[in-house]
Image (cartoon, rainbow, N blue to C red; front, side, top):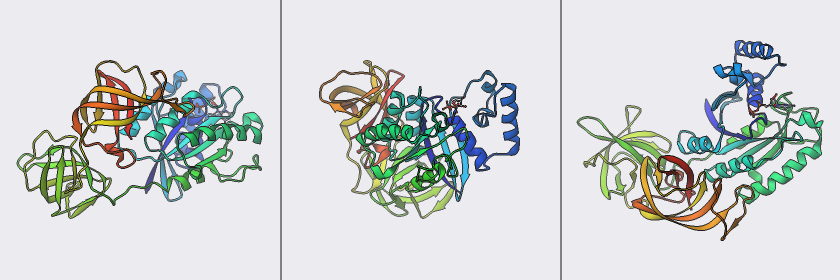
Length: 405
Ligand code: GDP
């Protein structure tokens, strides 16, 4: 089944677990036994039925009334399976999006319409980070509409305020939808609700279905295979993942930064010999030339179309913590020392506004020029995601993330 990854964003307590719990129930993605278990725990905790326990019931912490750290829930709908990835904070969000395993380009944001909740700075910060890392389709569910009497004004005012920010950080109007929901009561989750007759759009799950279908991965353009290392005792094979383009048996390739050129004499995918492979696949390559052991992080391209290697890069950087002296970047598995940084612009991630003058503040962004200790095969993020993003460390401590401009 076609799996579509959806990154889940939203402030704690705005109803993410409740929403996913009800999705699981309403789409029959979960067994009756699990539902009964959630009912049982709701009773033990003297609560009305809490759909959120559908998720929490995976974990022991439930009994203390705690929620877990990271959640992944699969929901079957029509011909697809949505895989919702929930992350508690910006660090997990960044690590999850950069790990490469998920190629989500759609996010669902939950904002509570309840009087004391609404749009928070943290919500905007997460949206900013998600956009930086390649999310370009967004569905905003304005939740807890039941607590404001399903009033249209409440929905419209959240939509209006958020839309200004969303557009400023670069989302296209046509890629963003808003829907009023009650995660708890189930309104507009899978079916349209009679309680919001003023809402003319589709139910949440249908919006997600429409949006997430537009995910694209280009098998055209120059080949970019990111090398993970060598395997095999006698005959060494180069293993890695194709980030872009495709590769064929007999083709001539280049490896940077080594500057080696070679011919492809064998390709294997999951242990089976194949004649060609393309974007998204993990492959093993036999080459007609020996390569050094120290090849992790190198890039294989079709000959003559290798990415440039550079020791100075310009990047938009989200600064999570103060950047200490011992700064380095992790780029495709490599640790590269950062020798210097020149700030070009300061960006406020809660408004999306930028200025040439400002203060260096954690939890905000900067546009900067980085001077690196070695040359790396970097490209702009918009060209090749995998060659245009990195994580920043101050010593061993996570300090932020950047995308090459
Ligand atoms: P999370 O931290 O975002 O996962 O939030 P939860 O799903 O745990 O919900 C936080 C609280 O908000 C719980 O007490 C839920 O019962 C409540 N809640 C969630 N959705 C709704 C809703 O649609 N309406 C109302 N009135 N309460 C909700």
